[in-house]
Image (cartoon, rainbow, N blue to C red; front, side, top):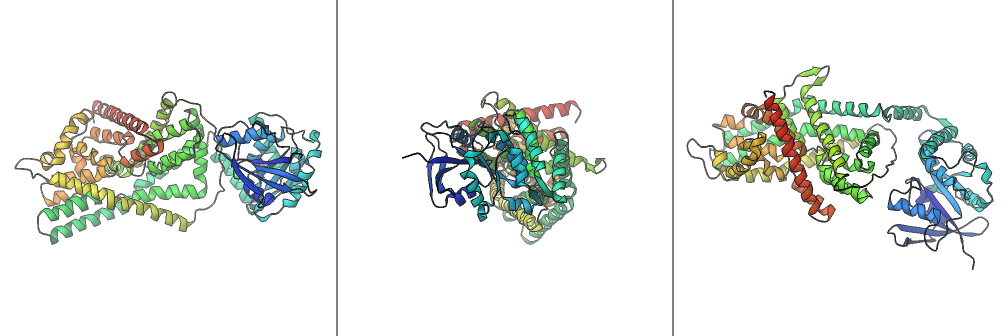
Length: 615
């Protein structure tokens, strides 16, 4: 019995190969793993118009034959016939996305240059037309030297024509492939751009405008400054726009405290409600407007399609420190919270890349740090302008976020040359279409994130603050004694104070660092509760936290406290997730040790430098 002729569906990820495979083979499919590789092998039988049966193989999506992941390695080995006992497929069916033609033609040229019988399926032409793009399949075929068949796999459009082209593929004249040769990658990219331009029949003004916008936003010299300018505007807005709303929440909390003090008799119950609950939890809730504004910008960037382009821009920086560009998306997620960021590293194929990303994810400035930054900046940095529309407070916040990014980049550079040594892998991603954000989706996203913040304030922060208040309240201080020093919590903090005093930290800071391990925001509620129990009278106890810190701390201490929270891994949940994702305690403990060391060193450098400068 003669062996069936084989054909392989090959192309970039998200080109519609699987849908085309299903349309061509129907139910005549079988699934297994490749020999010695845990990558799914999907094959099926199809009948050509001539009646000849063909074994069709659906290969994993790939960007090049130079494999960078296990999936791409399988594609390379099948195409080249490197699996034992198997020959290379006689026919290649290259599936390209009509709406992303230029990018998909880069790999297509590499495959065509192999000199095999080849057919190009110009898939998802309906989506391209919806986006305002009409393509000339004949012009594309003339440029590539192989048949090009427009298809819409999910609607079975072009399936018969594709089968006919496969039927006669072995009769192709290879001399027609005069434009596609064995080129270098930069040469293939340039050729892909020219071929794609030549195949365009019509293009709407909106699509051309999007292309021109990409030329600016993705420019190697213009793109990064635009990105950092946008981030600068965001951090200016976080302070400038949030102030009226934060003041309103603060006034509401003060009114509640006054109401409780006027309703309940003096005693431990009233102190618990005012000092432990309203003052402690309220000192964190007051920063909800800033959290909402920050996430409004992030969600808008995601919905407009700019966030993916920001990842593309940052890829150059990531690659320069030996880290895969695939790490950017998990690190970007870590700006909201390091926990989903660390979990998102599962998409990184290279184990050393993944481990490095996990180890530096806590350096991204998560939303939990924002209340800490905001209260210190509001207390010590004057709300003045340093230029047209540029506030000093927003400038300092931008500097703190930037310091976290720089710290992560430098940590990755060191780790990739020591503990997680290895070569960086490539990174290619699909860029979504530009579109206006939908107000409904934006509102739902903001509500979800605000609810997460409030739920956190009502559970973790509430619980830790109440426990801290109890530990701060007993035993009661005698005449001339400070409650925060003689209490159980105060005595624990006194032991830690010996360690952190050289870097400018006082007793209150030492006390706040311990409960803040539950969640970084707890540092704010811990400070508020500590000053409340030490207050001489009710008016002082109800006073806002910012003015108290400004009257009790030096600027050098405040700056050192900010530097500490840029680096310190003050989050037990993050440490627990890192343990789960690395299957042990070795790397989480390493992460905690090096981050606390960085926090101590840079807080010390900041404090000593500020003291030397007279602050």
